[in-house]
Length: 195
Image (tube, rainbow, N blue to C red; front, side, top):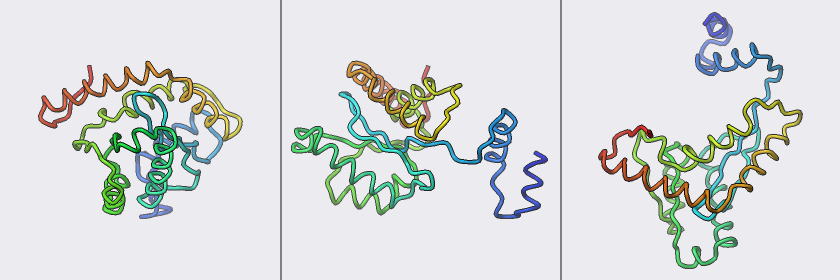
């Protein structure tokens, strides 16, 4: 708390919030020496058959509506190339969470213009997207406790992990996804804890 107060005095309204200050303080206390951001996977897209598209968010890039539209354009190309039958039949649905970039008017117009069907996520239901309950925990588990020498190492590690997930595991993930949605519907859209 003392560090946060010192930063507030020095930077006033330009200071980071209390939570990120505490997070960085803990990282440095644990031995971290770099102030560089950790690489972020950014945007993985997959279905019950496997990875359809993934890319890494550049270090200095914020995931805003303009950047997310570029990602969606790449996703559309990937679906067209990797799953032409789904593309041709329009037999694919986009399920992303309620991040501001995902729900922005610009992105919603883009998706409507291109006829991309979406499965809307109820507010305050973070465990409904397969990335949240299946993919990210799996990636974190593999990377936890590792110190990487170069910025490319975590990218290589997470890409390898993504590509090693079997088709059967993705199919099981989507069975879980249907169960999560059934719980949400039964709870009339209210928050549901996964037990």
